Image 1 (cartoon, rainbow, N blue to C red):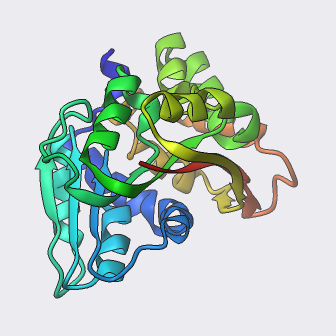
Image 2: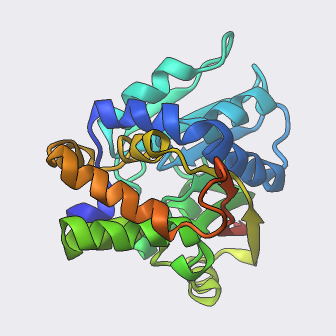
Length: 269
């Protein structure tokens, strides 16, 4: 399904990098990389790399003797990713489907994937490809969001989008959180031949602003950004107020802690 591919325009990719990466996806990338324990000179593949926050962290850890490749289906994301490579380093960006990775057998020591697996229509094929491109005893580290019951703010957004734009948009917002069962996640990788499969529930607590303009800014980074931009001003403001009214705590506080939770899987080939 198109919504599972979570396609965004180049402008939305730029907004995604500006709004969501600093302080949020950057923090989650650090958690992923910490568990990967990358070594100097290793060859690393970042699958569904988005705007490249994981790949950027990886290239600094493996150093000049290492190799980092980022693969994504979305050209807008890759275009944005290429703008943010750390000075003095090189990352190869490849446009490709996760089920047909443009890489040779046993080409990498480590495969990483932050918040991508839940969007793959053919998950088993994508994980089999991760297994194929890993060298013997290679490592895979993958994260997916837990369910909306563990991620309150996306749940609030999903409900508001459904009420104001229609069920389709609420479902689209909820899609990243639809693969939150740890047992199913682990079984997917065991079935592909991975061993030492472990799944850890991890929670971080970033801050969510209560300022209407900051809430509105978040929508710029979503796939439905253009639809939201075309809403009449009054309708869009009503949706924002709906979201703000659902945020727990004191309405006069400028910000509130927003716990988010993901499963991080580690395994070996």
